[in-house]
Figure 1 (cartoon, helix red, strand yellow):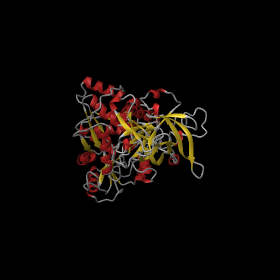
Figure 2 (spheres, helix red, strand yellow; figure 1 turned 180 degrees about the horizontal axis):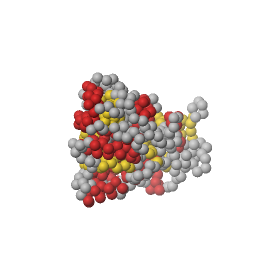
Figure 3 (cartoon, rainbow, N blue to C red; figure 1 turned 90 degrees about the horizontal axis):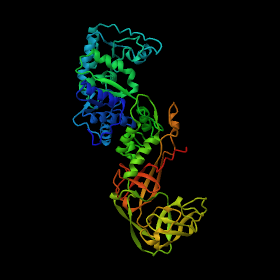
Figure 4 (cartoon, rainbow, N blue to C red; figure 1 turned 135 degrees about the vertical axis):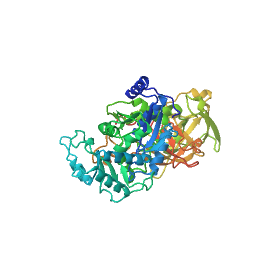
Length: 554
């Protein structure tokens, strides 16, 4: 089921499962994660994955992965494969229990005929717009279709001809015959089948009529023996319909639906329709763009599955909708990477530094630990020489009060190396500083007696001769406001959500960084080698998160 340890975080669903097992209502808990393969999974789905697979794991049951693939027009094999990859990356396995609602199409069709024979379903010729207008409002009852009282024989004949492909798309639908005056609009003769002459990514060309989600979902649960059908609160109003179908069909098992609050994350959108629009309009590079809240996007950005699982445990499971601040998700990965990410040195905006009294042509290898609290991570050798690169922001000719980096006449320690003192600068024709000139104190290298001498600050560096050139992508939040809603939601996109910095200089140990290797760039943030574009010798790094919450003061 999963390689992760049980979290045992108490919530109302765990209590329900515990009570059902104690009472003997169920001997084995069977849950399911049932995505529609019409897009990539996002962080909201991660909460559902952790919940459904976690409950099954903790109570010795099983969790099915089922694709509710009832709409071939919007579904693609790419989405199916990305969903499988996302679930596995989060740390969960379904074993032999991978299913498709489309595998049940024949059974669902036979049950639909059963409803027709009972007089509880009928073929309707109204258009989609007419059906909507007949449905009524929250305060007014609906109006019955003029085709509602067709005989069972006529409905059965029409439905079979629909299956045979006699009618064009939209010409007819099959509707459940329930109650057009019901206060629950979902019970006002909902559509069960529509005509779609489209190939199906899993079922092929076998069908030209397809069941609606509300009809297929509960019956798929019943076929698979699901005991606890867990969904988000927006399906609460659909529950009476879910139960109506179960009540009126000879299903082999009786699942029970339970609802929990979905994950609403600030500075992001969770609608697949909106995410697809971002992809199609070129606002992002794809579903796995590191700015996207998709699981593949945050994976590419450098988030760890452990951080996502911990985040889902932290926010908990409740019955009331609420917004979770993006900073909580960011802090989760920050805490995780703080424990595991090796510390390395990377200069993103290089400024040349020359140590005048260091021997020309000389190089020494300095041994620097990867992590101050994790000796088990080991150390690496970092070359040091006369010419280095430092961060441009780490030098100011006229520094403000409290500036603890390098300036004329002042001393600074180079991380893991020596204390240097600025003696002057070189400029280009426009007066810009191109080189900082320094001297060094050879007795102050780390490990020597002089290393105890105190100076006001420490900066990172890389050897100009040995540095690796790399591209670094500085990612930030995709939107500028916490809740990007309304018709103009795309106007709220953050124009600074990514900055691509080329010609960065990194310490040599990063030359062979493998895709998805994660590091802390000292004083910069946490970074990950891009799983798509990074190559040995030509690394590309994505900023996962800054060292501190840069949005806290905004």
